[in-house]
Length: 143
Image (cartoon, rainbow, N blue to C red; front, side, top):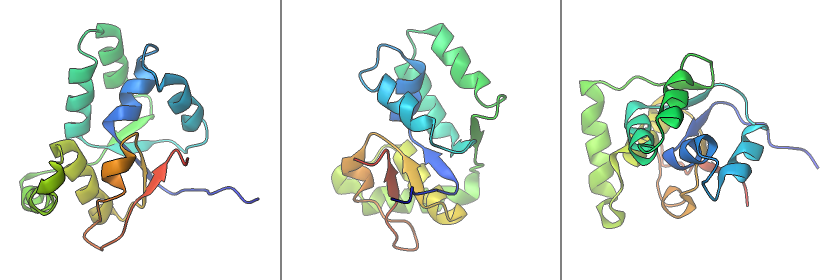
């Protein structure tokens, strides 16, 4: 059987927190999945902010999160004022499932950057979201 070899991969908050927190129920599964992924993984400041909030009880984990941008593990895609309208449109479009800013930013970036794969634990919401090109995202890890 041929393995799926993804191109660039977006990473959501859940796997970031799980990788950095040994106490997280998804820690080992996310670490194992990460071994199959090419570096760097791509994300954005809303995801980092959300992860830092969830990791707030561990200064060590937050420092690791911040260092991950220097080590080549995580690359942040830029967002500026011109992107706000597109992110806001996604939040309105999916308001029935109340997407967090981080989710909307990732879906927006997937469309803008033509990234087709996301590493997330939020299969429910990310199976619903569509990019501006009306494409669904391939969700990793596969189940």
